[in-house]
Amino acid sequence: MPIEFIEAIPIMEQIEAAGYEAYFVGGSVRDVLLNKPIHDIDIATSAFPEEVKTLFPHTVDIGIEHGTVLVLSEGNEYEITTFRTESDYQDYRRPDEVVFVRSLEEDLKRRDFTINALAMNTKGDIIDLFDGEADLKAGIIRAVGLAHERFNEDALRMMRAVRFASQLDFSIEEQTFEAIKELSPLLQHISVERIHIEWIKLLLGKNRNKGIEAFVLTELYQYCPGLNEQAGMLKSLIELAPYEIESEEDSWVILCHKLSLKGQELTSFLKKWKLSNKIIDNCKKVVPSVSFRLEHEWDTAHLYPLNEEQVLMTERVLKILNVSYDVSLAKKKYNELPIHGLKDLAVTGSDLIAHLNQQPGPWLGRLLKTLEQAVLIGQVENNKLSLLNFLEERNVNGNQ
Ligand code: ATP
Ligand code: MG
Image 1 (cartoon, rainbow, N blue to C red):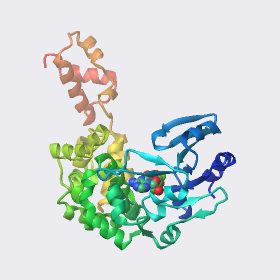
Image 2: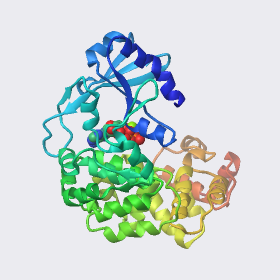
Image 3: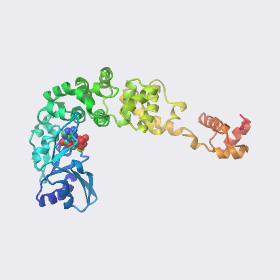
Image 4: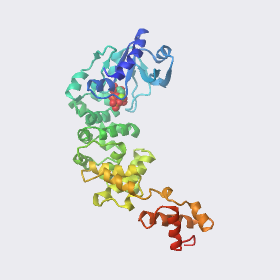
C-alpha cells in the first residue's frame, strides 16, 4: 500500500469502530494497482454525512449534498463520501439528486468503468464486483453494466472513456466503443467546463494518439466547441512528435496553430471553451510567435513583446510540432535583452518631467518609447546619465 493509503487507515478504522464500513475507491485504487503515483484519494463509507461528522472533531462540509465530508487529521485532509446511488437522471447529465445508501455494491454499480469501480479495504483486500482487475491487466476500458444505459445517464462518461484511453494507454472495449459512437450526440447536453477537463486530460495523456483516434472515430469531436468538422486537423495531431504535451496552455497553442486561428477567430474559439483571460492572452501572443519561429530565428523585435514563459512555451510547442527548437538558447537570448519592459528603463516619466522641466502630456509616452527603442537596438546604454545625454545630444525634448 502506498503511504497515502497507510496514513488514511486510522481514519477508516475509526469509522469501522463505530460500526460502519469504509473503503478506498475510484481512481486511487486503480492507480495503486497500476503502480502509478496517486494524486487524490477517495474514501467511501456506509456512514451518512451527519454520522461521519459526529466521529471526527475537525470536519468541513465541502460537498455535503453529494455526501462528501472533509475530515482534517494530523495535517492531512480526507474526502469521505457516503455510499450513494444516483437516481432520476435528467437531460443526460449527472443527477442533481443523490440517494445515500448503506451498500458498497450499490455505490460501485453507479461508477463509470470497471477499472474505476474497484474498492480496497483497510487490510488491502480488493473488492472487485465487475472484473475490473482483469480489465486493468488487459488494458481495457469497459462500462459498468450496460454501456448504452450508462452513457444515457451521464454523457460525460463518453469523454471520460476517450481520456482514459489516452491517459492510461488503454483500449475501449467494443460494446462500450459502439455505444459511444451511437450516443456521441448526447455530449451536446454536457457543459463545456466538464468536457474541457476531459479533453485536456486526453491531450496531456501519455498515449494521446489513442485518445484522439477514439475521439474522432466515435464522432465525439463533432459536439465539442470549434472542433466540429475538424476531423482532418484532429487526425493531423497524430503526426505530432511523440512527446507528452507539458501543459494545458501548450495544448491550446498547438490547437490554435493547427486550426490556423488568428486574431478575433482565435479569441472566439478559446472563449467558446470558456478559458481564462490568462490562457487567452498567452495564446494570442504565442500562436503568432510559433508561426514566426517556423520561418526565422528569434530577434529582439519578436522576443521583447513576450514574457519569458511565453518564449519558453513557443519553443516547447515547436518541439511538439516536430521542428527544430532550442529552449535554452531562446531563454538565453531573452535574458540578454537589455530591458524586458518600460519598467526596466533607467529613467522614469517623472525623471523626464523634472529634467526637461515640462508639464506631463502625450510627449512623455512618445519620449519613453524613443528611449525604449534606442536601448533595445543598443543605441544607448540603459543608465540614467546615458539616457539623458542621449536626449540632449539629439536635442530631443517634449516638443518633438
Ligand atoms: P483522475 O485520476 O483523473 O482523478 P478518477 O477516475 O479518479 O480519475 P474522478 O473524477 O476523480 O476520476 O472520480 C473519482 C471516481 O468517481 C471515478 O474513479 C469513478 O469511480 C467515479 N466517477 C467520476 N465521474 C463519474 C461519472 N461521470 N460517472 C460515474 N462515475 C464517475
Ligand atoms: Mg480522482
